[in-house]
Length: 327
Ligand code: AMP
Ligand code: TRP
Image (cartoon, rainbow, N blue to C red; front, side, top):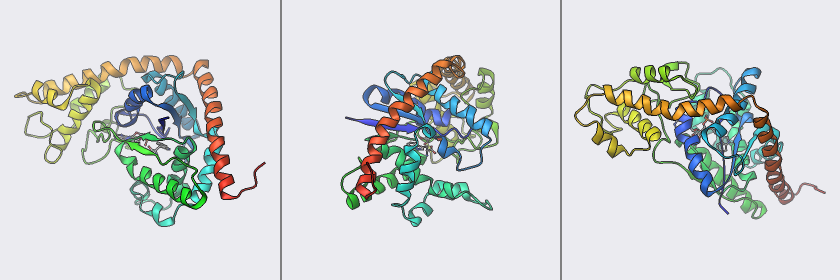
């Protein structure tokens, strides 16, 4: 049985980076795999969160899953903190993780750089991520490119645990799409489009109005060559916009190059904004219908029950394998 576990942190306003790298891939993946999609709220609190915002954003991510087209009848959708097994296996995985391994994580280095102090949880968080995945015996994990290193650590930890205590965990494979797994900032194509960037023009948010979407793409940096051509080495800004276009339109890069041959960036950017708005507006409408609904609460309650059942079974096996007293 092929099984998937993945999630998007409720740590900021969801943008088209998370859409291309995670949400959109989830939609096709649900056809083929048994899926668990969760809201990793315990991960969000590795950095300071305003309680009201965390509450709203956790519901937002769950609502976006459903609004984008994840089918709650087929998939289990839940909030991480409602399944205590995550925190418990997270601790057990920390005991299997080397200090040096965590110190090599580039996301930790980036997030701690220049800060006077960071939480201990920001450092140990990859062990919790491994627990998230291993609890569900996930065979596959769809993520954006920035999570590759965490997935490699998860695989190492699963193998290490299995070698020490006997076969307990499935060793998961990442699924990283060729298109959309690394969407860069609209203001600076050398930096990942990020929820934590304070410059609102660097990303298109999933709740932006068509007008905002148009303005942001119109302002997006390009280059002086004036040709719509994919070349990440010499034309990173335009290449990034082409990838975003491909994500929203479903067109191939070759088709986009052909369509805009001999034209500047004007109509390309306008059409890109239209393609993005066309895809996002129906998602926004559905999001508004469900975000504060009893339907969403019911889905999340049911999801937490189903997830707990799967997670508790694995947690028990892991604890027994390690020698904990269980009854
Ligand atoms: P996060 O919002 O950091 O929890 O990320 C949720 C998912 O979206 C993860 O699989 C990330 O790898 C992916 N992701 C986040 N930002 C981007 C981006 N700029 N481009 C592509 N994927 C992204
Ligand atoms: N670490 C991921 C991110 O920052 C979020 C996450 C937490 C996750 N646990 C996970 C993703 C398990 C996939 C599987 O984007």
